[in-house]
Image (cartoon, rainbow, N blue to C red):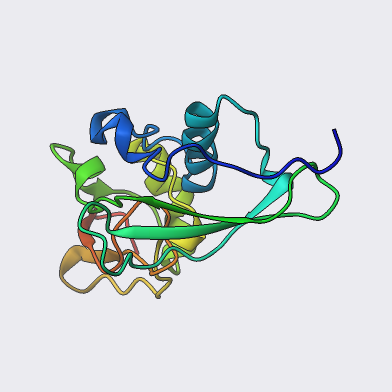
Length: 167
């Protein structure tokens, strides 16, 4: 079958599974959104077959706070684009009830991502957070969600405590 149309049966594929059934936070957002689509569609769309746009608001939509456009890659089995609507969550959700202390020496947020992911059991990608230098004034730094995050609501933030060995 040459170039079947890229079709999703339901615009609320992610949301219909409910917040508790979102892909786990230990799965990167770009992987998780494709998993949600594949679950809804009963398909196996691969990352190489589509590109993900930048998540944005969903104006006029009272059910979902986010829309993202998936565009098929030429000659990869699909064609066309699709706008997928779902709800992003606050970055505070995966950090609830956890010790917010991180140990290590990092120049900026991006260089600390591996340690943050390992410590907190999440899978933040560079597209999820604003990169800034880590100046540990008062023993803390703030992790801020960027507008390009797939899972997390832009602008939400958490404060991470720096252990004494953090320089």
